[in-house]
Image (cartoon, rainbow, N blue to C red; front, top):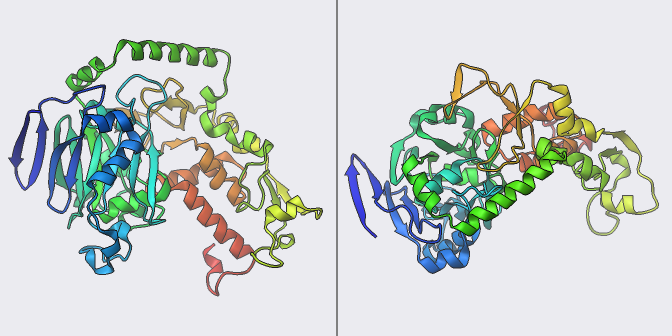
Amino acid sequence: MNLRWLFRGPHQRAVMTHPWRFDGFPGRVLWVDLTAGTCEARDIPHEWCLNHMGGKALATKLLVEWDTTDYEQATANQHPITGRMDTASHPTAPLLFMTGPYQGTKVGSSGRAVVVTRSPLTECYIDTYIGGNIGHDLRKAGWDGLFITGASESWVRLEINDHVATLHPADDLLGKTTWETEQALAALGECLSIGPAGENGVRIASPLTAGRRAAGRGGTGASFGFKRLKAFTVKASKEAAAQQRHAEDFSLTEAIKEQRKEMGTRRKYGDPFYAFGTSRGPIYAAENGRMPTANYTSTDAQIPELSALKVGGGQGGQTAKAVRAGAQAVPVVSAMDTHELSGEHWHESLPDAKQSGCCAPCPIACEAADRPTVDGVKMRGRPVHVNRVDRPEYETLAMMGANLGIGSSLDVMDGNDAANRMGIDTISGGAALSFMCEVALRGWLPDGWSDRF
C-alpha cells in the first residue's frame, strides 16, 4: 500500500492515498499515540477483517495482538499525569473506537460503532455502543477504527479529514459540556466528545455524539479523560463516500432494497416503534414485570412500602423479590401510570415536538425532540434550538424515571438532558441516585448528608 507522511508543525499527520482495499473494509486503523503526539495508519491483515467482521470482534482481536501493557506490573506511580492507582488509567491502556461491519453502507439499523477498553468502573474488558453518524463517517473517510494509546500532558483533540489525521490543543474546550463542544467544533464534521464528568475521571462518564448518542456503559468517558483527549471529529468528503459505495456488491444492494421494503410495510401499518422508538418500552416492561421501580424494589411500576421489605443477605435477610414471591403482601405506597412515562405521553404533552432524525442510514427515524429546529443556532450545519431537549430512550425512562419514583416522561427529559450535557451515563447515574434515595429514606445516610438528597 502506498503511504506518504506529512510533518507540519508539532503534530504528525497521517495521509493515505488508497482509502478502500477489500471486501468493504478499509483494512486499516488510525493509530494515535497521545504520549508522542503522533498519528499513523496501520494495516489490518485481511484475514482479521474477514474472521472478525468489525465492531467489538475486530477490536478485541486488535487488543489481543497489539496491546503491550503489562497490567500485572502497573502501579499507582506509573501514570505520570493522573497518578491513579487503577490499570484502566494507565497511559498505555488502549482505547479503541471501531466501526461496525456495515457502517458506511446504506444498510438500515447499522449505525452502531463500539468503544472498547479496560473499564474504569469495573477494571474489566468493556464494549459499549454508540449511534449517530460518526461511525459511518469514519468508515467513509477510510478507517475501520481508532486505536488510541498513551496520554497527552495537555488537553488535545483529534481532527480527521478523510485520510488526514491531526492532533490539536484543546485547552479552550476544557470545562465545556458535550453540547458546547459539538457547537464549537461543528465546522469540522461529526464530533464525539466528553463533558466535565469525563474530564474529571468520573467512573460512570460517557462520550457523546450528536448531542444525545452515548457510549454509555463502563465509564469510557473517563478513559478519554485519563488520556487528555477531549474530542475527535470526522469529516468524509464526497470522493471518499463515492469510493465507499463502490465497495457495496450487488447482493448487498438487493438486501438493502428488501430491508427497506419490509420497514416501509411496517411503517404503513402503524408499527409503534417507528413513531416512538424504544420510548414505548415502559408500558411493555411494566406489563411483563420488567420495569425497574424505586431502586428495583419492584418491577411493575408500583412503589412498595420500604418498611415492609427486609434487606441484606444471609440468615433473616430477604430481598424485595423474595418478599413479593412469598405469601406476605407488600403494601404499595403509590402506583405509576406507565403511559405517562412513555413516549406516547411525551408527544401528547408536546404537540409541537417532531421526529427529528435517526442514526444514519436507518429508515426508522425514531429520534424526536422538543423545539428541534429554530433558526439562529446551528449544529453540524443544521439549525437547532440552543435549548433543544430530546425524547428519552427506554433505558433512561426506566433508570432515571420509574427507578427514581418519577412517573412522567417530561420530568425525566430534563434529567436526561443534564446527564447528556455533563457526559454521564443515565443508566449508571440513575442506579446511583436510586440507591442513595433508598438509603436516605431508610435513614442510613451519615450525619450531615440528608440535606444533599
